[in-house]
Image (cartoon, rainbow, N blue to C red; front, side, top):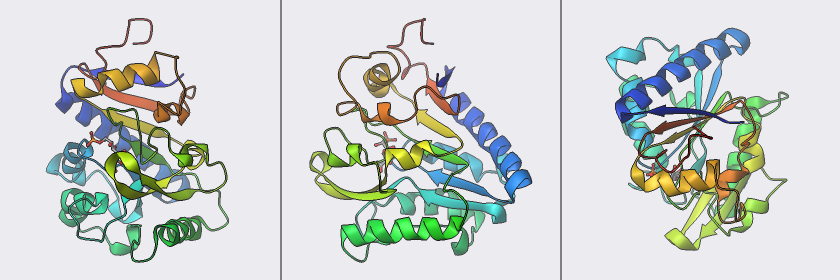
Length: 246
Ligand code: 6PG
């Protein structure tokens, strides 16, 4: 069963998640010499990234041993304000002067299919002979229950072979490059960062309601039954959950 951590205030949620990431990084670096951290896009993580780069946390990480990947990327040129990597650059990489060699961005200069293939190869190269198991996969949740770029009723939801796929998402009228559910589920740890009343319906469909299918509620594809999945929620996002789940 996934682990739910519910906080009244978003600031407490983000602080607790930063502490959790700190602990995971310390453990991973001690055990394997590095921390492979998959970042989520969208707007929710901005507060978290800023906190990690703040005086309170920046000195608690050995940043040279932390490698950053993206769970998904919008298929737009670097520098485009829609880019998840640009948001991370501004909130995290620049303030911490993270080396380019520690950042694995999606190259969107070719076709979407080429971009997905290149990203898959880039990730595989980093892991070499070792299995591709990220130490932490940070995920958001759309109010339509998508996560990464696994949107409802898209073909990528049934992808079981590829690790990275390109997909045209009608809903946002955009090509996306995304980690597939099997790749995300191989992560050692998965953390959902979800806050705000707008997400309460999606949270209910993922964590409590069993009706409908994962085609409608794609975040259900992420290992719901595993201790390694932790949901960091505020009270508003968790407001539709009954006491049986909380
Ligand atoms: C993206 C994200 C996506 C995001 C959700 C929630 O590229 O948009 O990876 O999966 O996490 O859409 O976005 P917000 O945090 O902006 O609500």
